[in-house]
Image 1 (tube, rainbow, N blue to C red):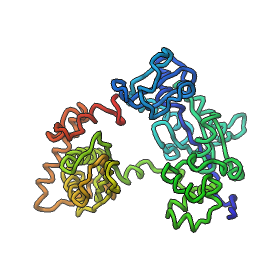
Image 2: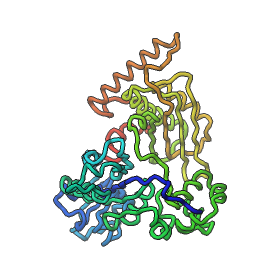
Image 3: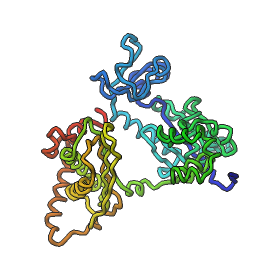
Image 4: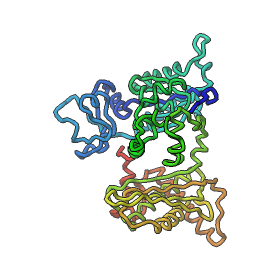
Length: 426
């Protein structure tokens, strides 16, 4: 395949990652060195099986403790090791501060937050804003300015990958910049720097896809680039096409977004259950999830026409995941309406033990577009006012202040969620 790269977009995209973010934040809070002190952040420090959410570089290097390791794997006889309880509220606060720093270098629509510690920043067109002595700033110059600002103000270390599109910026970050602090790639360097990389090192290729590719004698990004497109497309569909074009450095995903438009696309909430649930217990969790979705819709002054229910089943069962959606006669932001739609969807699922439940809404409109049936109008208004009242109580006093009685049963998850932030206790 011959690519005329001169005809492809050549943006200045930064992909920024905060090094061992949770552990680094805790190090700064404790007056320690994020790079050289040994720190582990654990989700639940009261359980020996508590999961390590982050480990400092020194702890990784000396004891091979990684994200996903368990508390019992951390040596107890080395007093240099600091174990910190996860504080998700603190990490979110720091993440917001970092986003504010990004905003000094690019408009909000040019900043795409990928996770709590990673984001893309499109700095195309800002070169003259940060010129030095009349010389326009390069993407590398701006990346260094961002790194210095984060370190000076927050004491945190950032790595930056630079590329002409989001995919290349992300891959150069993961495979080079995380080791060196800063790395850039341009189209002519793809074959030299990216093609030798194993497929499992490429963003977007998980363990299952790696195994599928390996069975086809595809082990590197270069192997994907050299594979016939029709074979990849036939085997993997649109994902196969995407992998092929990514291997050649082609990525047409948007680099400017409208944050409000992104939010209007839809919302979802999900939970991984601590044990097997069957449909009668799952109904309790579904009501809790629709309560959260309805509240989020009302906060956005929005309503949704389409609701979806997704289930993953126990690994002990050879049962494929379930996902189904339905469109409503009228858009809604009422939990009961969403719940009843989900229960209808649930009736089409197998009664296998459930370990993950997710509920989402799409096809959203402004709530003023809600059409209420003449005979149900009063009932609808009562439910809407009740929803607003519960929203206000939660805003003022937290999630634990009000909940459904069913959430107090053994199937309920609301109270546990109320005590957590980002899936972990604050």
